[in-house]
Length: 97
Image 1 (cartoon, helix red, strand yellow):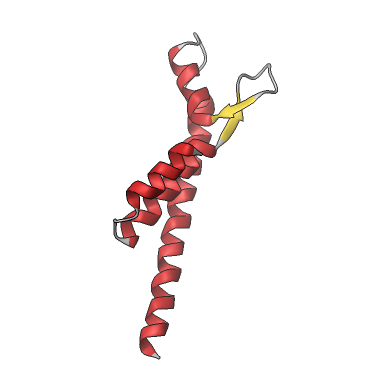
Image 2 (image 1 turned 180 degrees about the horizontal axis):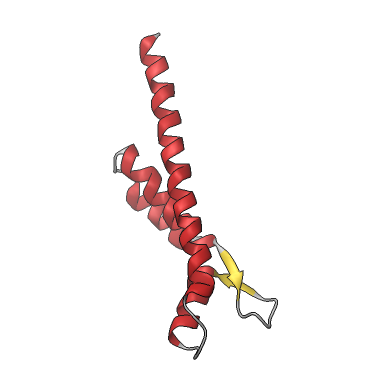
């Protein structure tokens, strides 16, 4: 949560079109959970599981947790794009009034 707070603070001077996707992607990256291993029920951030699987485990692919993490990042970018579109339409309606 501390990393997210610092990231939100660092991105506040950016334009909205850059700020929203950057914040959304980092939030998805840090908070997407995945199981530590197929034999255990413990959960960890997916990036940690993917990194551990890719570097330390022999015979276990990086993509066990990396695939779902990548999918979640794509979903986060789509959500960010939809939010930017919604905000733009809202501002346009306010400008038209």
